Image (cartoon, helix red, strand yellow):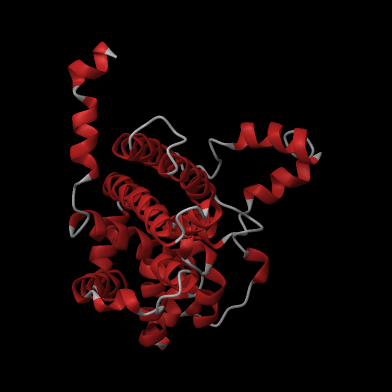
Length: 289
């Protein structure tokens, strides 16, 4: 405790939790989200064939969590589009990533050191969205703890949860990529984060919200930066989940060899967009030509 008081960690957490997300952190969120959209199979072709469909997909990647959360809470699904500055900023990022001459903007943001910084900033926004979703649900349903968890979960991973609808806009239909069936690390982390923030909102977790935001942000940013740098698609929760699932649900301990094989080829849209390399995308573009 003396170390914490010397470091003024509580005061730092308070200041950190009040930092505005717009425009720096939101810009990073939009860049990484639309960067992952460009990694999706066929997204470049769609941007050439139908810019409107490509723009709609980009908006879903940037604002899908808000849209889904608004629907669940009885608000208009287009309510967030009243924030003109956010829409214009996301649209500018979409245009630069897909249509910048010589792909210069894409090459800059896809450069690994730059990308790592952007990924870390994106996780700051994700954590704040989870906390805001739980807080919003708490005001609407004061004792609806499950609703708080669901809304926080959706705010943190709504893009992945509506990815099948986004695929339809690009002319694809892959129901086997349902994120509920094949949960990626960000989706799982959003669920666990929503549970933690719900416990804190219900005063069952002996930690302040600002401190929880700081701790969870550090965990998410560190995990994603390490995974991105190592091109890894594992999960820090894998070992614990394996033991818990084996104990409670009788799942094979550690998974079978076939399970590991399927895990190596991600079927979730979020995993796919993180796993596709720039070289693979270029080869696909050349074949299309």
